[in-house]
Length: 222
Image (tube, rainbow, N blue to C red; front, side, top):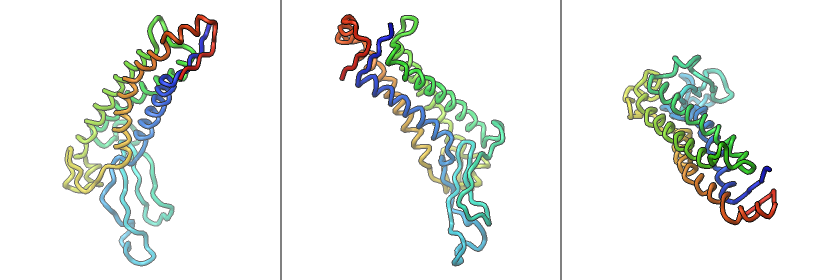
C-alpha cells in the first residue's frame, strides 16, 4: 500500500533539490559567465545618434555580442559548433564536470517528487541515496568551477578580456551573474545533501509510524 507522507522537512528538501537543479542548468546555459571589456559597435560610436559602448558576454560555449548595423540589442548563441570548439581544454573539462553534476541533480530532483509516496527502494532510504548523489554532484560542480578560471588564458578569452588575461587572471573582464549562480547552486547542493538526512528522519519518525498503524494513507505532519 502506498502511504503519502508529507512533512515540512521533506517538502523543503524536495523544493530545494528542484531549485538547485534548475539554477545550475540555467547558469551552465547562460552566456553571462564573463563580462568582456567595453566595446563600440561601430567606429562612429560616441557620435549623437549612434549606439553606445556595450560589454559583450562569454559563457562556456555561448556568447552575446552586438552586430554592427543591427539595432535589436545583443545577438546571443553558441560560438562552439561542437564540443571540440569550446575555448580551451580546461573549459571542456569544466563543462564535462558541470554537466555530470547537473545530470545527477536533475535525476535527484525528478526522484524527489515521488518521495511523498515512496520513501525506500530495495530496502534503502531514497533520501539517503539522493543525499549521497547530491554530495557527489557537489564535488563534480566544485571541480568544474575550479577548472573554469584556468581557461582564461585561451585565445577566445583574450579577445574579450585583453592581452592581460591569463589563467586565474581576468584582465579587463569581470565575472557575470552565471558564475556566481553556479557557486551559489554548489553551496546549496551540499546543504541539500546534508538536509536529506533530516527529510529521512521526518518521514520515519515514531509519529509517522503511529499514523501508518492507524491505517491512514495520507499523513501530513508539520
